[in-house]
Image 1 (cartoon, rainbow, N blue to C red):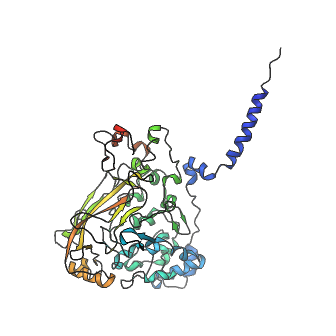
Image 2: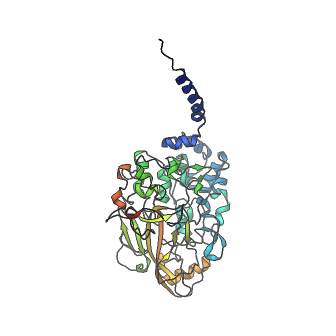
Image 3: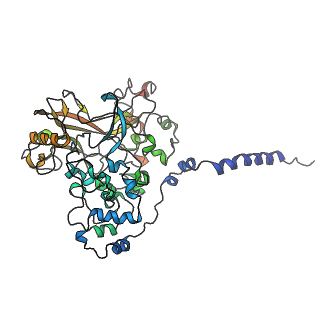
Length: 485
């Protein structure tokens, strides 16, 4: 008796092939890319050397007579839309789109450096002489904030693209003595060296502002940052850029952030890449950064406290403890983050003229989110505590003029610095001032450590866990009773 041939099995295989092949072929590329993180990392095209191009353009020109705008005009001959694109970015305008301000009766305001205060160097408005050394524009003045912003020739191409020999000076202009022709000959795609000049030194020095951005990231080890160290990522690998629009908005300076404009881990990784189901259960409530950045300022210390009230004394300058022009500081290394619920936007951002209660800390910014917010996750932050001047008559924070020959850093006269601000930025001054405590939060997203260093259960749960569960809205450790409300 002969065996029955399994034709049914061949038929089943055929049916499955018909069903699966179209799925595999036409599966969205973005979904496939998420399964392979490297598939989403931008490719780095070979950059055209500009040495001969620039040499020919300035062949008959004395380098000592060349200005920044001269270089920009030369760039625009081959890249005619570049300045137009740049001038539409927040890197150029230093402000976000108009938003309704709830605490100002719904008034619509575009929040930017001209109308906000921080608790580092306090205010860019009126201090253009120094603050614009990190702006991508030339020819600033103190008389008219941003009056130069309408001239394409004032776009500084070199600050992001010159690979060597370039530095900024006063009013956003090139530092005196810079050979701009040589700098232009070195241009290429931005690297950590170009981005870091400003972003690693925000707030007045290395590591001052962010905590997860400092000069150690020029050449980091993989244990410090797995993306930049092990894989040698440049900033634009994550901060993907199209027509000079750089993905990623600074939540410390804006109020409402469109998630589509932000950098996220899921640009490259699965939303839940963990095989362990216990970890997967955390993904709705815990941000990736919370576990994968157990500490920041791991190499260079970051400033966590700044007291302006002690400035002006001849106590001997020490970069990490005291400077006469700025007051007293506290720097720390290997800082454990502060954890808050965060949905990607802010609940509040202090604007010039907002009334305060000086008997309690004033929030410079306050991350939005709560345990009841389905869009919020527990997120790591750096908390910077300031002690800065306020008007005791009007009860609002003051924005002193610090830079320049008449500024506080020269005269050490607070009263004069506030009256000068009244002239330049129009903030009325009652004639009396004091100092008050302020809090400012910075989201921690860099210095992602190798997965072997990620937080374990006991780091958050248990008797010595790092989470303040009650502050986060839980009655206690959720491992003890259940989980999110």
